[in-house]
Amino acid sequence: MQTADGARRDIVSVNLGQRTYDIHIGENLLQEAGRYIAPLLSRPFAAIVTDENVARHHLKALEASLTAAGIVSVAIILPAGEKTKCFTALADLCEQLLAAGVERQDKVIAFGGGVIGDLTGFAAAILRRGVEFIQVPTTLLSQVDSSVGGKTGINSAHGKNLIGAFLQPVMVLADTSLLETLPRRELAAGYAEVAKYGLLGDLSFFEWLEANSEILLRGDAQARAYAIHRSCSAKAAIVAQDETEQGMRALLNLGHTFGHALEKATGYSSRLLHGEGVAIGMVQAFRFSEHLNHCKAGTADRVARHLKAAGLPTHMNEIEGPLPPVSDLVNIMKQDKKAQSGKLTFILARAIGDAFIARSVPESAVADFLKEDLKSK
Ligand code: GLY
Image (cartoon, rainbow, N blue to C red):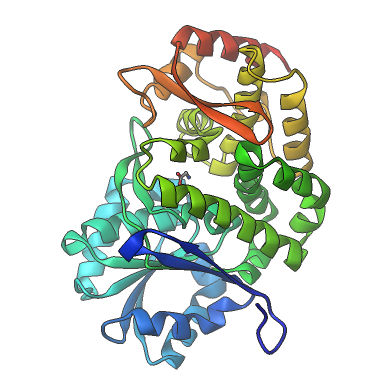
């Protein structure tokens, strides 16, 4: 669909019965946020949760749009970065939301990337035993993945995203113009999650990305909108079938068991962004699949070539500074949410676009693979 001034608008529905919601994707949507949000409110009031970087670039525009729609808003501004996904920040956010007078019928707006979306969604899930929230994702990663599907939570000393709840947002507003102020490194990190959808279940999308990733990353609006729409559609279809990850939703974790372990091993610091961990993890998932003879030799190299061209790291050795020994990495992986009866679960692949869930993967096989992988570069 196009607006009168030619701007592209897409809607993807996440079909979950009474909790069905729409993802609106388009340019300059932020200017219209008030008009989209007003009909969802029980009174003309909303709390915005954001981080310092997003606030600097975009908070005024969101506030102005809410004001124009007659909505009074309060803004809570948190430090940027993965370290904010912790108990201390959660407690502080809940207290600030209560101090701002957020009632049970009010909506909280998560305005930021994956950290803000995950933290705010979890705060919403527990505040007054549950308030509704709206996702206004501002990064490529959050527009194609974390704002959709209702996973909310924080990190633990034991690992990534280990404490949280499922709470679906009531709407997602993905303004693709916001990506213009995103640092190149953040954009590439988000691109890893776009590539993930092709790698896990859609060879033709991966081939499209091979042909178009360069213009997409350079800023081509049509290519971005198409990739975001296609990614959200793929995620919505999976979430509609398996909301709480009893089965196939785990496929969305391609590269995440390795990636999360590396994020934890690097202290959730700027040494490794989430999407960078996922990029390295996806290449490892394909190399591990080759190592176990599930997929053809050379497949992982094709995956690595593509992600490297997008500006992403594709090997553990590219992470600055020391990493813990393989045995520690495997121990971190044992805390992964997909582990069952103490056994590791990995998302492996038969080919690009054909991922599957491998349960009960022996620790020794993972350790052997990681030792070999560390030596391979
Ligand atoms: N990011 C993985 C999921 O939402 O299931």
